Amino acid sequence: MSVAMNQPQAAVFVGPGQPFLFQSFDRPTLSEGEALVQIDCCTLCGSDLHTIGGKRPASAPLILGHEIIGRLVETTDGLCAIDGAPLHQGDRVSWAIAASCDDCFFCRAGLPQKCVRLFKYGHQGIASGTPLSGGLATHCHLVSGTHLVKVPETVPDRVACPANCATATVAAALRVAGNCAGKTVAVFGAGMLGLTAAALLRSLGASHVVVVDINPGRAERATEFGATSIDFSEIHSLTENRGCDLALDMSGSNAAIQQALSSLRIGGRLILVGSVFPTEDLKVQPEDLVRRMIRIEGVHNYTPADLQFAIDFLKTEQNQFPFESLVAREYPLQDLQRAIRDAVDDRPIRVAIRPS
Ligand SMILES: [Zn+2]
Ligand SMILES: [Zn+2]
Image (tube, rainbow, N blue to C red; front, top):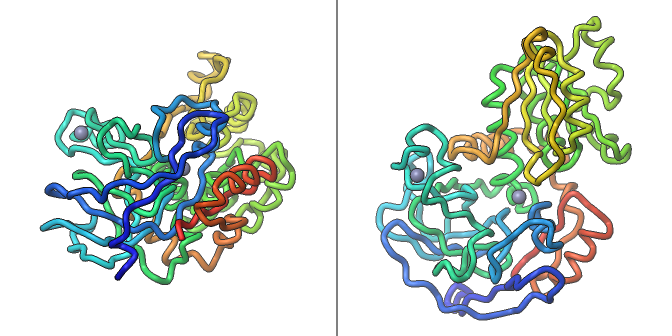
């Protein structure tokens, strides 16, 4: 008997400071357009840790975890990947964190991540009626409107898991940024997003990528991911004192954003990605924006095409950058509490959880 026949199990988050509850769930009966995935691996994202630590509101009880890789164990008629390829039982898949209706105002406006009927994996309360929607479980129930990508066997689990969070988000930011070839780019924050951004920027032909982080150890690591410098002051010499063409903030820190703004050349562009939690107001001098002709833009999550781009990037470039090394350790689902403790205490970029 395959594991798929077993009853789904999950670690349920009931609230900050409370132990996770390990529970069994009924195997869902699939409706049209749905699928069931047997989870191989899920990496813990910073946002999961924020929720667990009580810094981010959540509709508990719920099953956390959205950076998931797994295999289809049950599909419904006509299930297709983003590229139109039919999907079958046994296919290894990643999927967009947000399922969307493809029909509402925002979906039609090219912002499916803001769909009015949004369903977000790892964020839905059990009370929503689709309890198995997170990665800290043996199975995940994919609802209609989920955008899937087939993941080649050559991309290891540890590399593939964060694709539908950090890699796709960075792909979205760089799509918005436009052609980066030959440009000097400053990246603020050397976590998963910043390191991935440096790697993707170099692959897309950026001439100089300066990665800045308040933690020197983290910044150091960026040199393995394509950063040409980790010294902010070098931006001036690299650009004959003009300033950089593009700055990306992945940190969400206002101090970093102020520094990013100051680093831009006339006509430069700042893209904010990391500000996904409340902060103080940002001090911006409107005259400075006008006279220096600065553009500031926010990018939140991504579209299905960005996820496809992310998986293709990892497939072809994974050997150029040590992505696998960013997942420090793996834990079985039963050891989730220990995994969380280690993730909080040691602050590795990621830890991975395997349901079996
Ligand atoms: Zn994430
Ligand atoms: Zn919609």
